[in-house]
Each structure stands twice: as C-alpha cells, then as structure tokens.
Amino acid sequence: MKYFSTFLLLILIIPAVAQENLIMNVDGRNQVSLNGEWNYIIDPYETGFYNYRFSERQEDDREAYWNRPTVRNISDRLEHGYQEPYTIKVPGDWNSQAEVFKYYEGTVWYQQEFDLPPVKDSEEVVLYFGAVNYEAHVYLNGKKLGMHKGGFTPFNFEVPKSLLQEKNNFLVVKVDNKRHADEIPTLNTDWWNFGGITRDVKLLLLPETFVQQYSLQLDPEQDIKKAHESGIYTLSGSIKLNEQPKNSEVTIEIPELKAKKQVEITEDSANFTFQVKDLQLWSPQNPKLYEVKLSIAGNEIQDKIGFRKIETSGKDIMLNGEKVFLRGISIHEEIPQEMRRANSRKDAAKIFEYVRDLNANMVRLAHYPHNENMTRMADSLGVLVWSEIPVYWTIDFENENVLEKAKNQLKEMIIRDRNKASVIIWSVGNETPVSEARTKFMKSLIGTARELHDTRLISAALEVTKDDEGVQHVNDPLGQFTDIVAVNEYLGWYGALPDAKENSTWEIAYDKPLFFSETGAGAKAGFHGKKEERWTEEFQKWYYEETIKMLRNMPDNYSGVSPWILMDFRSPRRNHPVYQEGWNRKGLIDNNGNKKLAFDILKSYYSNIKKASE
Ligand code: GCB
Image (cartoon, rainbow, N blue to C red; front, side, top):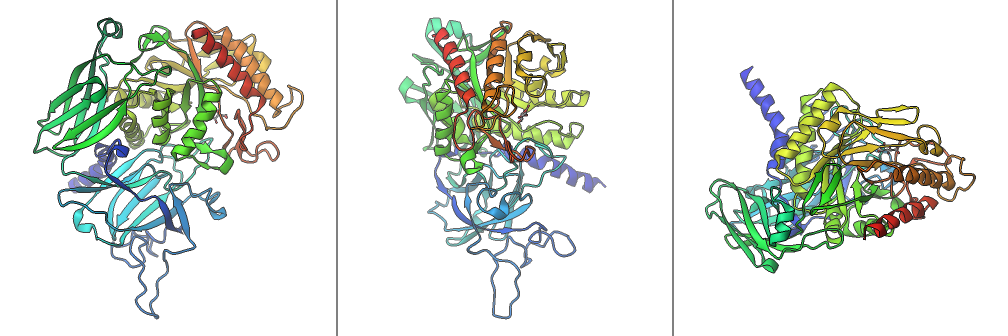
C-alpha cells in the first residue's frame, strides 16, 4: 500500500516537473528546426499503444507504433508503417490538412527522422515542442522521453546522449486530442478542437550549464513617479539554471544602457536587482525593446525586452504611471480563410494588420495562450495583451488533479511570456459558473500567478450576475480577488434587442477598473436587410452602435473593452444551415477576409478615443 501511494504521488507530480524544466526564449538559443513534412498514422483504436487485450504494449513490441516498422523478409507480417502519401505538415493542425481529419478527435501518430547536427561532448540535446493539442507521448529510437498534457503551452525533454544516433534518429509522437471531463479545457467549448503538433518543434543544443529560465523587469516595488523624477530605474529579476553550476556567475548585459550585472549563483537559482539610467519605458506609443544578453561560462543567450510598469490605482489601469484605456479586440488563434490554427510569424503579421487597422491598442488572446509569435510581435508593435488559460465554462472544479493541470498550464504560460512587456493581464479563466468550489479553485490559480512574483494584473472574464429590469448586476465573488473586474456582456444578442442597451445601467459590486472582456453579435457577411433582421450586417452594426452609446455612459471606472471578435471562427456549436454552417459569426471580418459594416463603427469609436487622449 505504501509503495502504491508513493507511485500515485509520483504520477501526480509529473506535470509539475514538466514546467520546472521548461526552457524559455528558445528563439535566442542554438537550435535546429524539426518542422516540415512528417509521416502519420490515424489510430482511433490506439492499436499502436495497446495490444489486443488492451494493455499497454511492451517497449520492444514490433507493433508498438513508436518502434521502427522494419519488414525483415517477404513473409514477415507487420500491420503498420510510416510512408507516403500519409504525410502531414508540422507545425499545423491536422483538421485543415486533409478531409479525413476535418472532424477527427482521437489519436494520430507523427513520425520524423533526423540526423544529428554537430554536438559537442559537453553539450546537452533537448527536444522542444511549442505546443501539441492535447496529450503528447514522445518517443525517440524506441524509448519514451516523456508525456505532456495541455494543448497551448510549450514543453521539452532532455534527450540522453546514449539514445542518439548520428543518422536516422526515429522520432515518434503520439498525439491525442480527445476531450475529457477532467481536462483543461473540458468537454464543452465554443471553438474547434484542432488537433496535432500545432506549433514548432526544435532540437536545442545547449551547453552543459545554461540559463533555463529568467525574468527581467522594472522592479515592481519601485515608485514609478520617483523613478521618473530621478531618472534612475531599478530592474529586478531571477535566474534559474538547469543544474547546480560549476561556474557560478551569470552576467546580464544591456549594451544600449551600458548596464552590466554579475549575479552569483550558489544553488541553481538567484534573484537580483540593479539600477539603470536613461531608460526609455515601453508603451504602445514607444514600444522600445532593449537587447539583453545573458551569459554563463562564455555561453550567451540574447533577448529583446521592454520595461514598463502596469498597475491599478483605484478605478484606473495605469501604465508607467499614467491612466491607460484599453481599445481592445478579442482574437482566436485562427486563420479563418484557411480554416486552420495560426502558427507562424506571417500569420501573426496578418492578424496584427487588422488590429492596427481597427485603431486598437490591445488584444485579448482568447481563450488559451496563443503561439509565441503573437506575443513577440505585440512586444515589437506596442500592442497590449491579455493572455488566458483555457479554464473555460464548466471545468471539474471539485477535482484536485484538475486544479493541478490548470496550474501547470498557468505556470507554462507565465514562464514562456514573463519577459514580454506587452502582456499586461494574465486571465485565469472565462465565464466559470459561480459556486464555492469554483471560487476556491480560481482563487488558488490567482495565488499561483501571484507567487511567481510577476508584474502583471490578474483577471478572469466574469458574467453579468443578473439583469434586473435593465439594471445589470455584477457581483460574482471572484471579483474580490482579481485586479480588474472583467465582464462579458451580450445584452441585445442573447437577451432582448440592441436598443435595450440604451436604458441599461450597471451595478458592479467592486470598486476596481471595469473592463468589458466581450460584447458582440453575429452577422453573415454580405447578408443585408433591416437592422432588426437577425444575421444581417445591419443588425450587427446596430448592436455596435447601441453598445457604444451604452459605453459612453459608463461610470468612470470603465477602462476598456475587447469586443467579440476580430474574425469569424470555427465552432461545432454553430449549426444554422444558412447563416453559420459551423462558424461563429460574431467576427467583424468574415472567413474570406471581408470586413462587415460593424468594423468601421468600432474603428471610428476607437479613433475618437485615441484622438481625445493625444
Ligand atoms: C462567450 C464566450 C465565447 C463565445 C461567445 C459567443 O461569452 O466567452 O467563447 O464564443 O460568448 O459567441 O457566444
């Protein structure tokens, strides 16, 4: 029994260990891309994993799909294999790549071979995945490297040298995107469950001792007004190495600021602070990024980091000591024209082009962490970001394991993006139903985010608690624990018609900045008619006009809005045969890239706010 419970404990701690070893800023390191065409096997019965008695196959089982399927002679029987024409692009969701995958949810095996790039004896080889949706089991040359759950966050495994061959390393990933009641997200969402190796795969070649994770930011304790006056700013952060170091000094350099700091490391991590002069703060008007170099024993990583302070002061959100209004837009990680997940720099550039056209200064990256190209580009363009974990709707809040899974995703999101100045809000969930267990669960997530000593605001998208004859009440107890009160509101779409907004008033239980994290209505692009006619572009335009009138009369804690949503997106819940056909139509832009009438309504609202603030 004792051994059994130790075993259980080990199983429980596996996810926590995954993020402990997560390597951040992979772009700044020595690497080889494993992107490209991979082979695949669709395996709905998981035949490659279980034998005919449905027990897990032995490691050396020839029919285990992680082993190389070698046919020994003409009489040999083997019932699987990896070869053309069964190939698939990585990164990429499988749904958009072949008709057989469109609605598929289950297991697909991915296989790739690679030759080892030149590696020094002292170097470590790490296999890195930007994201795999949802559960990934990774095997190299017949041996299991590890397992990861969570469809939108990165993970990596160290590859033992003894396992590597010079040529033809046989890499297999079992990817399973089946939905489960005790996972994050759970069974039910309003988006497409795109499966696959959806983000980059890389081999990292790292020195024996290297900086695994680090944070560097304006010291959150510092009074920003005093810093402005004195011209002296304190930067602070932390460093975590991959192991107990032999050489115990890390040098941090910001050449443009002529700043250099040596950090002594006695265990495997350390905190530090140092002062700099003549710092230009990062902001949407001036998205200044500084080149930062971190080196240990002659090995260097490079990054580009912006420094800014985000905080709340009473009813306001303050950026660098000044009140900021969030002209936002919500986004799913999709390129609707191709019915696929976005994953590249090019995709990010296309999305941000629309964001800028709208005069927005902020994006809500719903409802899960988007790929790192998005946050990197937001940093360089000066767009503020809300980043979220997929604790969406009715998660199994009573289950401790589920809480651990949510925490793991939260930590992976924060570790990956903690040095991105653009990210100003971590969201721990969306529209979770009020109950004691739910509030305890969410409060615990907020605690975890705060424990990481991060410099952001923390929020969660709440719902209107009650519509009492036009009075919109928001008193979800979760609002006590968040830094801003964020509410999704759909008066005029899910209840009544848009003109109901005119006489609505808002009663918010908390005296904090108020942010509308969603508001929106559906329209089929090109469908025109009277404004009262559902699904016309005129209806959606009317909805936006009425919403904007309502927003103009909001109390002075109203700090911004991120309407739902930039582009139409795929959703299995949206089955009207004429107007939806599997699309959520609340986009301001349709799936062919056409702007709907409401786009310009929001654009001119934002342009007026922008002018008034300049
Ligand atoms: C919401 C959800 C979002 C949905 C949207 C809708 O409140 O947060 O995920 O897609 O409403 O279209 O109903």
